[in-house]
Image (cartoon, rainbow, N blue to C red; front, side, top):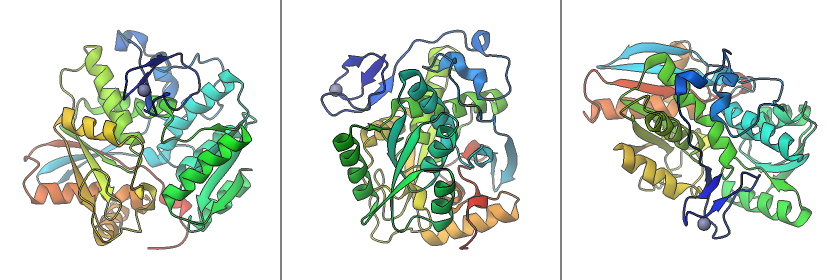
Amino acid sequence: MLKCTRCGKEYDERFILRCGCGGTLLVERNYFDFFGNLQPYLDMRRYINFLPISGSLLPPATPAITPVSELNLETVTAIFKLEYLQPSGSFKDRGTWVTVSKLLEEGIDEVAIDSSGNAALSLALYSLPANINVHVFLSYDARPEKISLLQRLGAVLHFIDGDRMKVHERAVEFSESEGITYASHWLNPYFIEGTKTAAFEAYEQVGVPDYVFAPTGSGTLLLGLWKGFFELRKMGVVSEIPRLIAVQASGYESLCERSPIQNLLADGIAIPEPPRREEMKRALQETGGTCVSVDEYETENALKWLRKAGFLVEPTSAVVLAALWELVETGEIPDGSKILLPLTGSGLKLTQGI
Ligand SMILES: [Zn+2]
């Protein structure tokens, strides 16, 4: 079932994004016997028994189980998870794969989404073989390379004059007035079901890390990781849940104190008022985590370090490393800690810039 995160009201598992009270929804199911229910695939189908889809209508490109690379950094062990190696070049494919499967099961063939790039690209890619028409709302300053790719994937583009929140509002208005399903990853409970598999994988690969850092704008990765580790604990697989660290772009913080100077490099998390903010706060509180704000200069340094180390990612992905440096330097992370750092988006989509 779907359950409202605000009032607790329950709904059948249809493609709805909000409760009547305005609260956001999450899928709630009781899972058991994690190892007994894993499927014999070395891709995301491995976790199909823990997802709210039947498995009968899956998009053909299946998200990968992404590799992890362990490096000793300062006094801690950094475990980079290479999420940028997914078919569309970002972790978003996990959520999209479950979403498109659910849309197919519901017979929905036209959707709208707002995005700074990666979420829309992912949805457009997986919707193409599924014959789902995708309307993408984006601002004029979206990266040109991503716009070009979206066009080639057949998305119908709607450019909006305004910031990321304005783009979101216009996509919602359009969906309501045209009677088209709004499939935003910000609200979509099925998207978070997909991103939670990153926690399942990480657990199978490296056990339970002490900390998990996630670039955090709308919070879809942070909340997926939280839900994934939470479900593992509920199934009795693990006893501890890692501390979650939400890494935000300066000037766009929704969990940390808002800085006056904007980090324009980390455009993927430039979301000042995410609808799942209360859930994110709860995830940090329940795991003893915190939020860290990263500015443009720190983002650029971390990006260059990652590139030199062999990780070709986009600037938004680099914020987790900048945050790690900061917390190690201030002594907030004890020596010897194991830290999971998902590297979320590919640098191959960016042909210009730093
Ligand atoms: Zn409600």
